[in-house]
Image 1 (cartoon, rainbow, N blue to C red):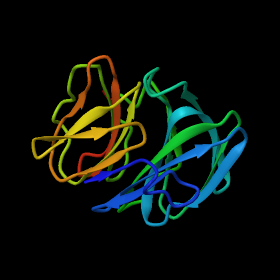
Image 2 (cartoon, rainbow, N blue to C red):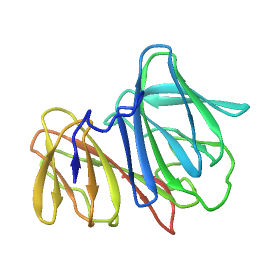
Image 3 (spheres, rainbow, N blue to C red):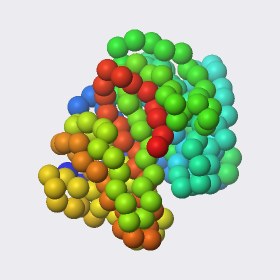
Length: 207
């Protein structure tokens, strides 16, 4: 099922969707903007899509450098345990994804460097994966069913296959996938997707 950009927002979030024990929020912050939220029963990652931010989790703090865009490089991330309250502040503005999954144990609030996340940044049950698809190609079929996918495109649009049929996706769109299926970048238009699901072999990876 496609969830078009701007149709899932629950203020102040641009995207707010849940599926099978997972969730994804995306928030855009103006210069100096901030957002405060609780993790509840979920473990949450802070994944900068555009820009960097300061992250406060209860009484601890860290800074994420972030990136110019999802097409520029990988990013550092922050891990937020369940049962905590977090505040993000973006001195220069930015856009941030908050993938989440229902957690079964408590892991510490911690930092993941950009050079570490491609190998795997450990979580309890959350699987978050960033994939860059060059124009004219398709992503690998490596993720599983019951998945949330968020998309960004350099310009124009791309496609997500669902039951073999293409669904057009643009920056900010979300698709809830019933099965493992590739995304397809139109010629000349690179495609990014952040995939979120729950599983036994957890963590954050980049491709």
